[in-house]
Image (tube, rainbow, N blue to C red; front, side, top):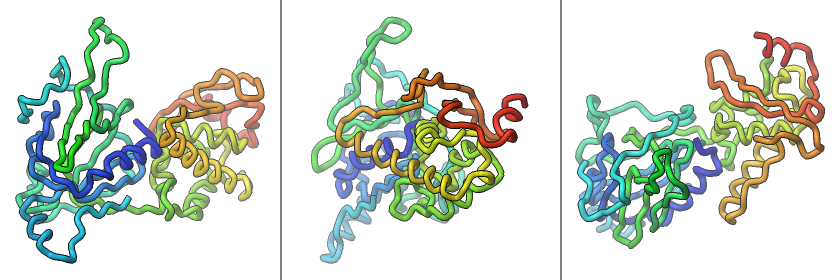
Length: 332
């Protein structure tokens, strides 16, 4: 699934629509009917780690709020398919990607939610949680087009899960994602690697544990937004010249500081490049040789009870510091 910088870009695309009313809907979703968004107002868009949260308010509440001179509409912090919407030659629903880890915690359900259906009751704020699949995306005022034929040889355009047209003009199309109504999210921004409130101290304390640092970097409690897809993890470890299986407890505090620096720096650079339309530049991820010309190792690893993900590293640029690391893990 997309990592933190990608979801931040999706948030940037959605933000201009905050404060506008949904006037037309479409899409292939059968678990979350597009028609339920009709006449709702998009009132907030928040991104936390790898998940996007959108708040929709019922029309009657917004109309009453609009009568107050103190109300400023659209404060943004950071199935019945309409037959008029021809969303491509195929009406088949695309498959959803992996749901990912849960870095955001939603509050307990209350009287505003039907506990049997998890659907907001009438008059309640509606928070939509969006989790993107591997090729998940959001398109603005346009639809995704097929870039190549599928396995059957058909040139079929992807079908969006959800399409929302807004009163201010324009529309959003959501692809390859899982969406569900949820209670208001209760988020701890201190673990978000792209948040100004990211807590380096907590991250450093977690990294200093007696376990491979490549495991800790995937822990969403401390590095939310650093997706198990590995790109940021692999790049940060290579640039810090740290072996993936080095135990945090044997690394110096200076080495751990450098590692966190590279995690944050690479993430911010990636986000900037996305906004500028530049391609992501990696040094070790999916490479056969490192920038110094050394052969790159690649294996699939992960905690016994967690994600098993591909790891790339250069044995020469990232020397092993302790015999407790790779040998035991590789032989287990």
